[in-house]
Every structure is written in C-alpha cells, then in structure tokens.
Image: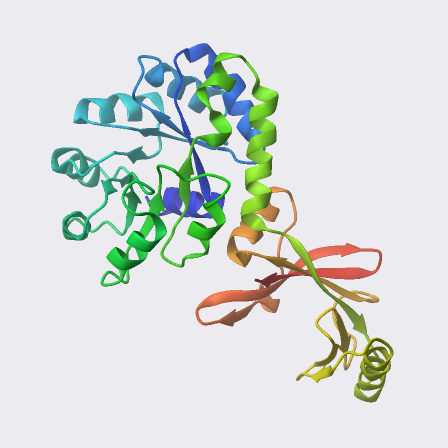
Length: 319
C-alpha cells in the first residue's frame, strides 16, 4: 500500500479517466505515458471500466492504474481482479473502505467533513480524497478543515484544473491532485490522443514549475569569490551577499569560495517540490546525489543531480 501511495505522491497529478469504449484504453494510456504521467484513475461510471483497467494493466505494466467512483465491494473485487492497484471512492462508504483495509488494498475514500476524516483515522487511513474540492469550498475550506488533523493529507479532486492546481499542490497537506482536464471525454471520443499527450505534458511541467534560479561559478579561494561578486555587483548596482560557502551577486550569480561540483560551477534550477522533481527526473534517467541533500523544515530544500552539461553541474532548489 505504501509503495502505491508513494508513487501517487511522486506523480502529483492523477488523471481521472472516463472511458465509454474499452478500445480507447490503450491509446489513452500511451498518450499519458507520452505526456510523462503514467498513472490513471479509471472511473467505474461506465461498462467499459473493468475491461479498460485490464487492458492498461496488461499492456502497459509500468503504468499505475487504479479504479475510481467505486461504490460497492463487488466493484472493488472486479477492479482488483482486472489489475487495479488502488481504489478511489467518491464518498466514505464504510463497507467498501473496510473491505479494502482488511484486504490490504490501497484506498482513498472521498471526504469533505471532519467527521469523515475521523472515520478514516479510525481505520488507519492518512491519505484521503477531498471531493468535490471546489464545490466544497476549495483550498480555504481544506485548510480550515484539515487544521486539527496534522497527519492527514489529501488528494483534492473536482474542479481542479490548470488555473488552481499549483495552488493546491503548494499546500503541505495536499498529497496530489486529481483531475480530468487533460483527458476530457470529447478528446477521447474523437481519438485526439495527441492533444491528450500535449495537455498532460503541459500539466506536468506546470506542476514542477522549473525555472532558472542562479549560476554558480567555481572560484579557487574566498578572496577571489568575494572580489568577483563585488565587481559584478558594483557594475550592475547589486548588493553582494555573503554566505557560508559562497558570495552572491544579487540572487542570480553565486561565487563559490572553493571549487565544488562541476568543472566550471553549477546551475540552480528552481522548482515547486524538490522531492517530486527528483522522482520525475529519475524516471527520465537522471538520478540525484543524496549526499548533497539539504533539509529545511523537514523538506528537501536543495539537491544536486548526477548531471553535467558544458562543465556545469545542476541542482534543484525549492521555490
């Protein structure tokens, strides 16, 4: 269960998929993979759901496939037999939740009240679906409601889209978000899977928010680093800022007091979540250097990658 939930957190976005035809499952799954988001919650709102889950699980084994809008224990059994790795319910149905818990099936039941959160806590659940998110008061409601429940995190779903996704994900109690804007039924019905892939990739990179943060230059000594930072600052009207291992000119140029990673220096890349970005880049074949990890307030604030381009190392910086 923990491994499945960890993957969902790393993905950050769970596409909520409604399929009227099972034959659309594989083209849609491939579009999500192409869009760099290999996860889908296939809703049990259509007769094609069970077969769609079976096809995705069989032919795209690296994809994380779950079942959504699950209302009965019979649907849980059918979904799991078809290959579903997690179950999502729209509300808190005790019989469905208890069945999943007793059979060690990852489940995120839908909640939108403190009473439902406490029902989940009684069953040892700490990751819950906040649904319908926007109609239930959105992020302000989630913040107000979740305050007393420090260990619980949420997957807001319902009204979540490109305009508010990052705001939700920035809140520390949001585990991931669910949405259907990149897998709209009309796109699937028309076979426009290229647009599904484009919208998915757009959502993924918007979630990460990758931006240039600063350029680090390797200097041979502390006096050299200070002199270079002061010279650049004087030229452009910036104020140098002294650090433990470097001197900054404004926030864009960092002069290292002694050579560090990278032949010439390093490039800092800002992102919305270092942990999520690390997992994303790992899937693309770029691993991190764990010995370089810096922790601040319980979260990874900076982390170097095993990546060198043009003589420069690269590291991630928490926004």
